[in-house]
Image (cartoon, rainbow, N blue to C red; front, side, top):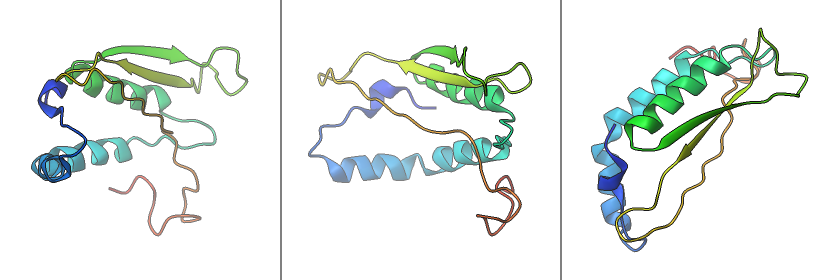
Length: 123
């Protein structure tokens, strides 16, 4: 993964951002495929820790400080199906000094053709 310090771009440089995305196409597709291969099926909540570790490892490679936070106290957080969240924290770079917050969901629902034309983990 490219170091995040090389990615800082002023907001008015859309063309430059698009070129960077194009240059990283193989990396983006590869990481997406790695994520899709992890069967984070919900219910019951399979493979959340494995997925969180993959995301955390990539954030760490990009220079972020990574923390894993388990959903202690929630009924769906169990020893068999732990709910693990990833927090990646980085200081703004390139003179912008801003922050980026990304939130997402790592579970695949509707496996078995209910919402998918193929199995959700078929890539």
